[in-house]
Length: 239
Image 1 (cartoon, rainbow, N blue to C red):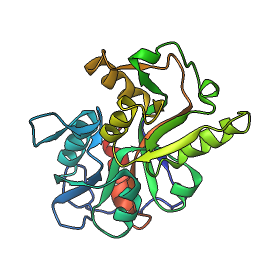
Image 2: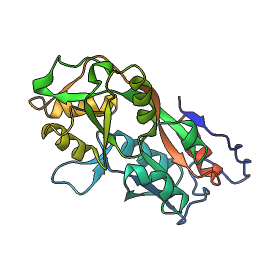
Image 3: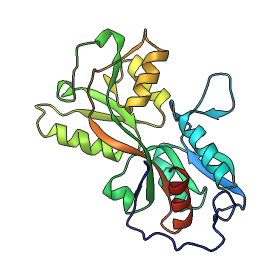
């Protein structure tokens, strides 16, 4: 079941807000504008040779938009700029693998749609060399810019590291994987679904660190504090 994370009260029900009708407030009437990094494999990404964004989250949002009587329209934005883009009115909602934490929930509302967590992906040649975060003490790891939940988890791990884990930020997962292959970083920190897909597609290059998660969390869609109507409509559509 979806989970709504918010310190904003629910919107008052409207007499004409029936499911499947375009009564939800959006920037452009009849259109649901979605901000996404579009490199969140396998949730929202471009397959090589295709100009159409695809993935399981795209399928979810296509169906949600249909139920709300809206046409989905995707906007590419860096992961670190999803919240600021949402607040500045560039799109109606954000997507792309956002986890909840107090800082984010002070700025936006969220609706969680699946349980996940962060892990580490390694080069195939390093299989078995590292087993958890503590085994990476003194190494440099990569993660997306704006990954505040993961940054906090690494900071906690560093409390018991003799030499700290160093973080290098990337604007997209493909760039992070390039950094891993070039040995600029020792490990990259995607979520579990991403890791499974990347390893399956590139078994000669990458391997998961093992059955280990750095931190568990819900993956969420994000909404402005003002548009509780859209937040609640998406929550209801996910039921």
